[in-house]
Every structure is written in structure tokens, then in C-alpha cells.
Image (cartoon, rainbow, N blue to C red; front, side, top):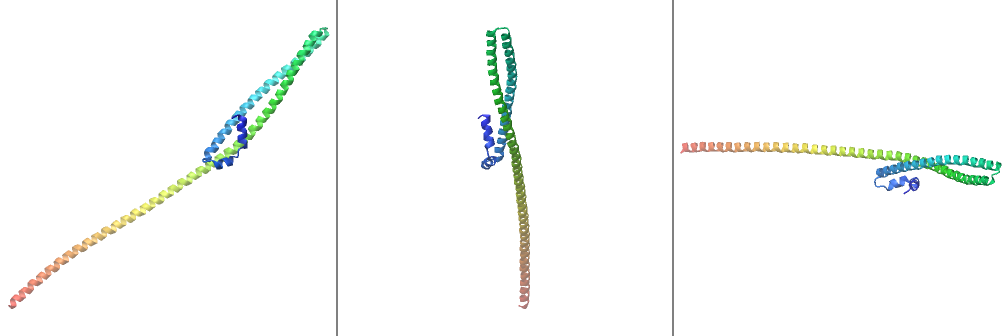
Length: 219
């Protein structure tokens, strides 16, 4: 695609519309900035080439105008010396130089117009580039803000998960401690019951022996 076609496409493009349709607006606008920068470089290069061509044509025109004056003087000199044939040749050459000078003037006019168009195009594109860069910086800032917000939310979520896990662990430890205390109480109560049963059996046995002794004395 030529530089003029790219320039027209860029100038006529609706950046906001393109960004709305883009899957990755930050990448899209970065590519736009690069394209504009490259196009400006090409426009400036083309403008510099036209300026160089204009300078060369101006120099050629000055030489042609000097040649016209020179052939005019030669024709006059030939007439004064009665050399009409030579005077005609000088006049013919002068007319040829005049024609070339007119063509060079026309070329200079076109080059001047082209250079002016280049300068206008460069100014338009630089203005659009500046606006696009401003939008690019805003998109980058918004993207960074979104990333920072996401990181903060993740950190908060992680902290919340950690708090929940910590509460769960403390609850689990409390339950384990209560179960251990209950088991200890049950074990203690069981031991107490065993000793009480044994003591009751011993007391009953002693009482039985005493009863047998009393009955034996009566007999």
C-alpha cells in the first residue's frame, strides 16, 4: 500500500470505533501508533525528496534564464554584423531554451504544490498521532488500574480464604480438645465405677461372713 493510501486510511479511520471492535484495544492502538509513525517518516522522506527536486529545478531555471539572455545577445550581435543566418540559429536556440524554461517553471509549480500538500498531510497526521498517543496512554493506565484492582481483589480473596481456614483449624482444635476432655472424663468415670463395684462386692462379702458368724453362734 502506498504512503498516500495509508495516509488516507489513517486520517479517515474512526479510532474509537476500531477500538470498540478490537479484542485487545491496547495492542490495537499500539499498532496504530506504530503505523502512524512509519507513515509520517515516509511522508517526510517524500517531502524532502520533493524539496530537493525543487531546489534542483530552481537551479536549472536560473541557468536556462541565463541561457536565454546569452542567446538573445548572440542573435543581436549576429544581426549587427550582418550574419542573418547565424542570428536565426541563435534565435532558434533561444526559443528552445525558453520552452525548456517554461516547462521547468511548470514543474516547479507542481513541486511547490506537492510540498505544500506534504506539509499539510504531515501536520494532520502528527495531530492525529498525538491524539492517539494520548488515548493509548489512557488505555494503558486503565489497563494497569484494572490489573491492580484484580491483584488487590485476589489478595483480599486469599486473605479471606486464609482467615476462613484459620478459623476452621481453630474450631477443629477446639473440637479435638473437647473430645479429649470428654474421653478423659469417661475414662475417669469408668475407673471410679470399677472401684465402686469392687468396694461394694467386698462390703457385701464381709457382711455375708459376719452374717454366717452370727448364725453359727446361735446354733
